[in-house]
Image (cartoon, rainbow, N blue to C red):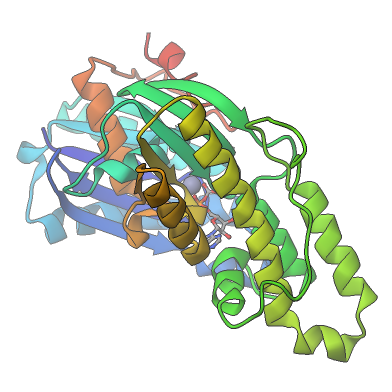
Length: 339
Ligand code: KG4
Ligand code: ZN
C-alpha cells in the first residue's frame, strides 16, 4: 500500500510518499518567514502553506518516481495545530482525493510523531512505552497494539520543547531554542549550577516544566550581563541536564513499573543529543530497548503522517469530505472523526 502524506500543522509544509517498508520521498519546507518574529505567526504560516503545498506535492511525486496510479490512499494531519495552517492541508487533500478517486484519512499529529519510529527497518513491537516530547506535548503513553493508546502521564504546565524555546528566548538565543541549547550545552558545564526537577518528590508519571523555566530566569537575572554572557553555555548545560533528567527518570520508572521492554521516543525533542544518550544508556542498564526516530523524522514531517495514515487505512478508517481541522485534538480522540 503506497500512501501520500501531507503535513501543514505548524510552520513546516511537507509531503511524502511511503509504503510499509520504505520512504520513497520526503519533502520538507521550513518557513523562514517567522524567524524575525522569534516564533510562528499563524496567519503568515497559512499563507506560506497555500503557496507551497502544490509544488511540494509535485516534488514528492517526481523525487519518488511515482504517479497517481501508484497511490492507494492519502493521509493528512487534521489536528492538533494552528487551525488555519491545518485547514490548508485538509482541504488540499480533499481536493486531491476527489480528483484522483482515492480514499483518505485524517491523522492526529501526535500519532504521526509516534509513527516516525516505524519509518526505519528495525521497528518497535508491542507493548511499547512512548515518550512524546514536542513543542506542544510531553506525554508518556503505553501502546498495547497499533493505534491504541493508554495515557500514563503528561505535563501539568509547559511542554518540554516549549521550555527549551522559552529558556532560549530569555537567554537571548534564536528560535527554535531546542537545537541552539543542545549545541551550546555540549560546550558547557552541566554542574555549573543545579536547577530543580519539577514534581521530583511525587511518584507520578506527570511532568512540570514551568518551575524550571522560572528558576533559569531568576538565575540569569541574578548574574551581571558580562557574567551571564560568559556562562551562557553553562546555563544551557545545567538547564538541559534538569530537563532531560526528568524525562529519563519518569520514562525508565514507567517501563520498570509496567514491565515494558521497549521504549520509543517521538517529537521534536527526540532530536536532543543528551536525551538520546542518557535514555539509551539507562535503557541498556535495565535491558530495555530504546528507539529514536532518524534525526530527519524527529521534527515535523509528512512521512510520519503517511506512516500513521497507512496503519489507519489498513484498519479500515476513512475520512469523508466533512473532515474538519481540530486545533487541540488529543491522542486517541481521532476515532470519533472516522465513524
Ligand atoms: O515536533 P516538533 O517539530 O513540533 C511540534 O509538534 O511541536 O517539535 C518542535 C520542538 C521545539 O520546541 C524545538 O525547540 C524542539 O522541538 N527541538 C529540540 C531539539 N530540536 C528540536 N529540543 C531540544 N533539543 C533539540 N535538539
Ligand atoms: Zn510536531
